Image (cartoon, rainbow, N blue to C red; front, side, top):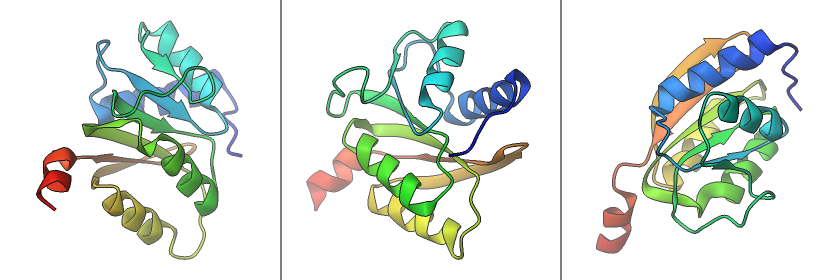
Length: 147
């Protein structure tokens, strides 16, 4: 599990995720991963009240506008976290993932999984804790209905 060693590390990750996902106080957010409770607390202190984890509340299918994944540093951990929140995300959702691992082919495998879920990678920003990758799902509901 990736550890956030100080409040400044956590603040940097939160700032980056909020900026990349264009998170507003009106969005429902689902957070998962090893540091999910820390991230939820930091978001709530900033005024984001519609924040939860899959274990804190029953995830509503397709009701969350933003998904945040933190604290996972293996490919298997990130894939598991994506699977855990994938159904809870809306057709126009955005997602941010803190990536701290460096397995062979790591980025390509995460990209393939995100594309399979209907996401397009938008940006990646380096911070002290690793790389925060953001992706968005442009009208996945319409694509799925057309298929």
